Length: 324
Ligand SMILES: Cc1cc2nc3c(=O)[nH]c(=O)nc-3n(C[C@H](O)[C@H](O)[C@H](O)COP(=O)(O)OP(=O)(O)OC[C@H]3O[C@@H](n4cnc5c(N)ncnc54)[C@H](O)[C@@H]3O)c2cc1C
Image 1 (cartoon, protein in one colour):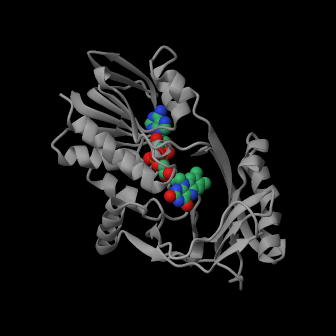
Image 2 (tube, helix red, strand yellow; image 1 turned 135 degrees about the vertical axis):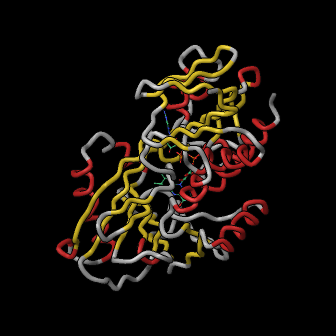
């Protein structure tokens, strides 16, 4: 069968667009290589603990996203997070901004994407390997299946989008040339409740870590679970090491910041985000190849945050809904 639109990626951008296009009456197929929705707004569970190891929270800068946030709050999809927030190390980098309202999805940061996906035609554990255009789009999946669609929306990070379209595609150079910072994330569970001086901290004076958060201080979470993000420089220098070594290397830095002995740790794990955030986020919203009815969307085209991914997804849907 021929879909109206094929959406590659089930993160904020892809699912926001897919929901809007479906609402507009299109037959939409979403294809996602991971086993569930969320993308970089990810939640990992082990037997007792739940960690938001990608996006930590979101804020609203635009009135449109503010209205959307209100709707999700009313529906019980998200809640306000009011951590005791510290800024460690005075100069440079991050500063806390007063009056910023921070929101998190419940029970994990992938919560909104999970709910959006429920009403859509999604295929998980399905990686698109190649896209070809000849009057319409043909997507070749890793498992040998083929999907045909009149339009395509690609929300994979730009390096991966470039690979899907191939080196001769007119958008290839622009996509392949977009630089992303990596981020290694540490997930740590402690045996007992700690008495930390803060629930979250921007770290400005550490070559290893730049963000620490008590995951269990977010609404709807439990346990004594912490997430720490390595700096882009540290992440780049250690990118190819195995995740066990990465966890072992980052755990002492977290314990030092929390002023607790390493022996109080119950478990540690690390995740490698090869494409975490764009080095130079753009504001165009989407990239379009009109003749091929192709749109590329994602956070990196609208500020590099959850709000940007959402607004890029909306812009993509508006464009794709208007094409013949
Ligand atoms: C460590 C970290 C911390 C962050 N912290 C924050 C924060 O605190 N606040 C904030 O607002 N933002 C934060 N962000 C950014 C935020 O996570 C992103 O802006 C947002 O999640 C991006 O959504 P997206 O839909 O554009 O892309 P993604 O979420 O990357 O979605 C793209 C999807 O495409 C899929 N895909 C890729 N290639 C293929 C293929 N070939 N076939 C099928 N599927 C494919 C991927 O698996 C992925 O699910 C953070 C990001 C990271 C990594």
